[in-house]
Image: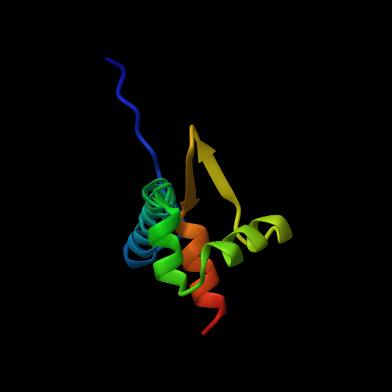
Length: 93
């Protein structure tokens, strides 16, 4: 196996360490975003959505037509994406 060496010039050991830590921190933050976005792909039914938002089914239907909160239909079930519900709750604060 070939051995690879790298030489670093004109940077102090402390500055190099800081750059490495910054790079690793940045990569971890991006990784965490990806993981969290996949966790947010959770759906809840119309009853739970109505309860969390404090609105009736008619309002949910109206919001779907206006593009405020998109419903997804799987068979005869109506589901809503949890991340979209949380965005509505955050924007109403």
